[in-house]
Amino acid sequence: MSQTISPSELSSHNTVSSLWIAIDGLVYDLTEFAPTHPGGLSVLLEHAGKDGTEAYHAVHSPSLLRSNLPVSKCLGRLSSPLPASSPSRPSPAPKPPLSSLISVHDFRQAAHTFLPPKTLAFVSSAATDCHTHGRNSSAYSDITLRPRVLVDVSAPVSLETTILGQRVASPIFVAPTSLGKTVHPEGEREIARACKELGGVAQVVSTSASFSVSDVVQAALDHPFPPAAAAGAAAAGDPGAEPPNVPVFLQLYVDKHAPNTEALLASLTSPDPADPAAASKIKAVFLTVDAPVPGKREADERVPVPVPTPAAAAATTTTTTTTSTTTTTTPMATQLSPTADSSGAALGRLMASYISPSLSWESTVPWLRRRLPRSVPLVIKGIQTAADAVRAARAGADGIVVSNHGGRSLDTAPATVLVLLELQRCCPWVFERLEVFVDGGVARGTDVFKALCLGARGVGVGRAVLYGLGYGKDGVKRVLEILNAELVTTMKMCGVTKLDELHPGLLNTRAVDHLVPDSLSEDHPYAKWRRSKI
Ligand SMILES: Cc1cc2nc3c(=O)[nH]c(=O)nc-3n(C[C@H](O)[C@H](O)[C@H](O)COP(=O)(O)O)c2cc1C
Image (cartoon, protein in one colour):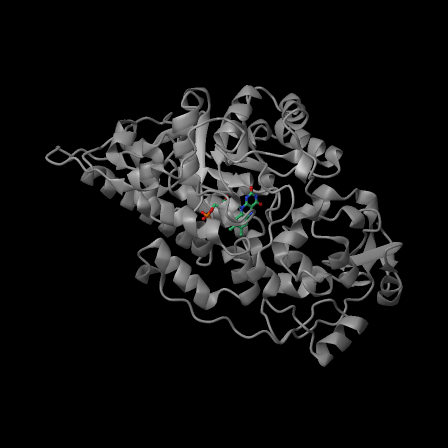
């Protein structure tokens, strides 16, 4: 790597057959890697022969290059720095003070005022007409509570429980979401710090996160214990008291190129003698199965693809890849302009190009089970029918997440709380065999309460956490604290002070019962399949 490379030499390697990019003053040969780049080849082509530093850091962690590319692909140092561009980004709108936000809805509204348009569209959008997205939430309000009164609820409520054998501070967990850096420069690492400060909230880290799961675990390990937990241990006079747990799970998208996934799992699960934490880096794997192809999220597709100003265009052709734009402040969006196609420019779709569409019960689940130590539970995320919950149990999964990707994958798929009811009706034994989780549309402590009453072991929150992340770790903490506090209030109002006292009898589901399938049959109850007529 002693070689120095001039800007003019760099600029001559700007094609698919020879694709070099400078990042942080070093020149990388990405020719072989480019076709498998998760964000697509065309993003790299935009930066080919140029300085991609800013675009790279907008979405990736500093360590990602080092961990994914052979050392030999770092060709040398750029002989002279490329002139810095002067992007004309509008300054972000001021944020309402954090202390003024007292509900998840407040956070959502606030995010609409300050997140850049492309980021907001990516985070908030859902598939096509957004029916499922809306019903995920509205189905919770159709289920009513049956409070018990004149019950002594003076005892403090502890939300501590276990998820997949891990001690957690709350049954509410952080659902996996991709590209955290589009919301906050520290992305998923900042979420990890918030989870630790809350005493060990479980966090599922996406394969498409801006930071690797190892980086996220490290951020949590490096972050100080919450003062309350430290004080509690000291007050108990127990120096050996267990520190707050760091329950980080990996959400897995299987790569079209299976060896990439195998290498990822091997690196995260095999004990590394030089790194005692390595063996415990991931406490479970959540295999996502509800997005074999990307959903059609029109709000995300529609946000205008930024058109570089003439000045910026000139700058990009001669010196730098950091385009200034007239329409957006999102660095990620500026990277993606050339990749917009006849379907639009959705970040979700562009990021999903590496995900394998050929997973199956027969091959994928046993293949994955063989690649994971027995101590690492396997959870299937994206179950939407009782029949598939049964398949997951029979395939040897340790858990399932009833999920429709927050309504981002297939519109008019059922609201997730209705699927929980379907499981209760058609295969109640699944709750004994597996840990059942649910996510989608959770915005209130009453929603969490209802899901727990229906047998959920934990309840995931996606967008709400990202809206909180707009304020960094304190925002994430506040979102989760609000939900925890609302859950405790609901429990006490319903005459309950312990999580294991929650049961379906605290709910009235009659308004939705007619929507819940009543059989495991794969057939329609009366419409007949006449294949010959098709
Ligand atoms: C911006 C965004 C990115 C997401 N990325 C992923 C992902 O990479 N992997 C995954 O399994 N689910 C992903 N999801 C789905 C969430 O894990 C979760 O199922 C969903 O957000 C729950 O619905 P909610 O947002 O209404 O809480 C994503 C959701 C959002 C909003």
